[in-house]
Image (cartoon, rainbow, N blue to C red; front, top):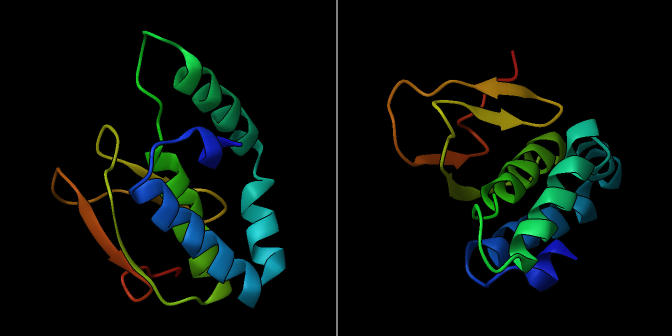
Length: 114
């Protein structure tokens, strides 16, 4: 539903990454999508997508969900995410604290789960 309401661009790219991860490891994607904060995010994002005014929706979290699922599934990827307030939460994996502000380029090799 979020993807249907969202404008194109990055949201479609992240959805494609989720689909690829699901083909490789459905349980990994299920764990990420069933993470407790995901439902709250989706509901708030849908509300904001349909509101004529107010804060912009946080579509970047869809990217964080896709990256977390891809990492858990062992899927290769390359994408850019924008940390919020100096943090990037990857559901089920943890919090990434970049050493610099701004967009962050991520690949499957840029995450150390240890």
